[in-house]
Image (cartoon, rainbow, N blue to C red; front, side, top):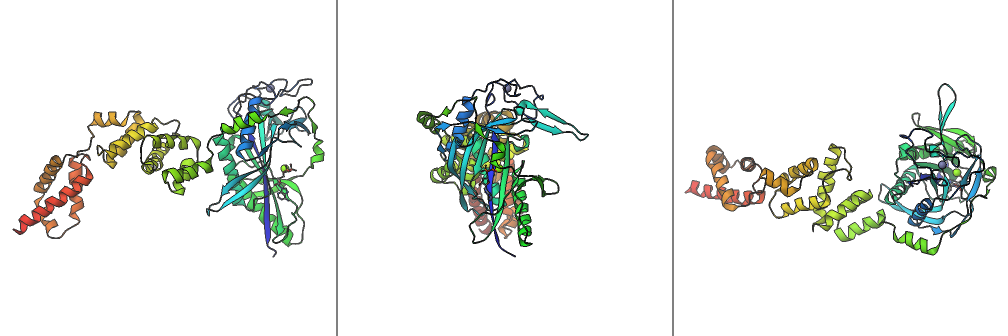
Length: 486
Ligand code: ADP
Ligand code: MG
Ligand code: ZN
C-alpha cells in the first residue's frame, strides 16, 4: 500500500447580509421563513432588457472580508458573465468575477485540536450573485423560489494547503467565525447562507505533482465537511492502490449513508464561456476606501485571544472560549472595564452565566444581566458584603428579574454578616446547643467540624462570612478544649 498525502482546497460561498440584493433593490429575506417569490423584480427574475446596478454595501462587505483575510485588493474590478443553463438561474448566466477578483493572495491561521497552528493560503475572494432555490418534489416536478436569486454572494477560494478532514473543518469554522465577527454573514448553515465545497486529491508522499481531484458539492455542515473529506481520501486511496485512476468529477455527500456519490463530470472554465459583463462598468476601489474599511475592522479572534492572554492573564483555553463569538467577547470586555479582576469575571461568565443562559435558552444579547450589573455583583463579593454562594443565588435572581445585585440584596436582606461579635455569638449558641457533638469533636471526631460550619451557615441563612466563621470556630473550639481539660 502506498502512503498518500491528501491535498484539499476549499471553495466557500457566503451570502452577504445586506439589506438589498446585489444588482437590484429587492430586499434580502430569510430563505426559510419568507413566502416564496415575494422578494423579486424584473432584474433578479432575468427579464430581457433589465439593467443591473452594483450594491455598494455588498462591495463594502466584500472588502471587509478580503481585508480581514489579508488579501491584496484589486483596485480595478471587472464583473464577468458566467454562462450556464439551469432553472434556478433565470438569466441563464450568473454575474460573477473571474480574472480580476476583489481580493487575492490572502491567508488565515487555523488551530487544530492538538493545539498546532497552521497558515492556509487564500487564493481569491470574489463577488457574485446567488441563484434561486429549487425544491424537487417526490411525485415529480420541481418548485423554484427566486427570493434568493441575486442575493450578494462571496466566494472564498483557499489554496490547496489543507491536508485532512480535521484541517478542513478547522478552516471552515475559522472562516465562519471571521464572517460573523465582521457582521457580514450569520453563519447559519442550516439556512444555506454558508456552503462549503472541498476539492480533494491524493499524491504519493514525497512527490510534488497534484493528482486528479474530486469536488464535494453543497455540504451543509462542518461535520459533513470533515467526514466527507475523510471518506473521499479513503475512497481515492483504495482506487489508486488497486492501480485505478480517480475520475475528475463533482460528487455529492449522502448525509445518512455517510458516503460520497458521483454527480457529474466536472465542467472546465471554458464550458462557462466567461466574458466581461457588458451591462456593468468596471468598479474602481480607491485607496481611501480601502484605508477606511481597514480602519473600521473589528479586532479579529486571533488578535483578541493574544490581547486577552497579554492584558488579562487568562488561560489560552478561557481566552478562546470568550473570543469565540464577538458578542460574548464585547460583553466580557465591558465587564472587565468595570471590575479590576478579569479572571474572576471570566470564571463567573464561563461557569455561572453560561449555565444560566443554557438553562433559560437565552443568548448573551437576550439575557437581562448587563456587564456593569455583573461587575456590581462581584464588587459586593470583593467587599465581603456577599459570600460566593449567596452571590450565585443573587446572579440567578438578576438573570430572571433583571434587577440589580444591590436591589436584590437589600430587598431580601442578603448582605453578608461580617460583624465578628455577631458571628461569635452565633457560633457560641450552636456549640451550646450541641454539647454531645462538641464532646465527640474534642475526643477526636474531627469530621464534625464541617457539620458545625454547616449548622452555623444554615442558622445565618447563608449570610455569615465563611472566612470569619472558620477562624472564630477554630478559636472557640480551642477554648472549649482548654476549659474541658481544666
Ligand atoms: P474550479 O472552479 O474549477 O473548481 P477554482 O480554482 O475556483 O476551480 O477552485 C479550485 C479549488 O480546488 C481551490 O481551492 C484549489 O486550491 C483546489 N485545488 C486545485 N487543484 C487541486 C488538487 N489537485 N487537489 C485538491 N485541491 C485542488
Ligand atoms: Mg470548483
Ligand atoms: Zn430584484
